[in-house]
Length: 168
Image (cartoon, rainbow, N blue to C red; front, side):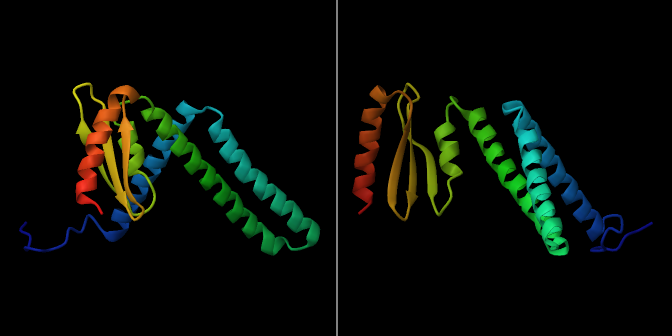
């Protein structure tokens, strides 16, 4: 059986590709939930409880006021929103606790900053692995040191003079 060049594979359709993408996303959510549970065992019950609590309060208010057809869908959305916000916060806290105390942690935090920042990790270092990272944005140039404060002063000063020559 010969195939024409450029013919699409009938086994992989658009729906199959979307299902595979969704399955990957669910795996990611499960993985993050596992990291959150390892970092803080009480976090997932708090997330689920807050979502269900908001839903229950809004449904009760809807039933008491007679606005149930309007408030029940709103309660579902508000409960889901609260759960997702808390899930994101706990995931970020778990991420930071996982990298705490490791070399390069400051660079990882800098690269996750919001806004239009250009981060260059390890622009300057010494033999003791004291490192200076540079973040450039609209407010200016920020130098972040990682290592012993006593040994880091000279590395940071050298990078500061190097940046002062190029920046205005």
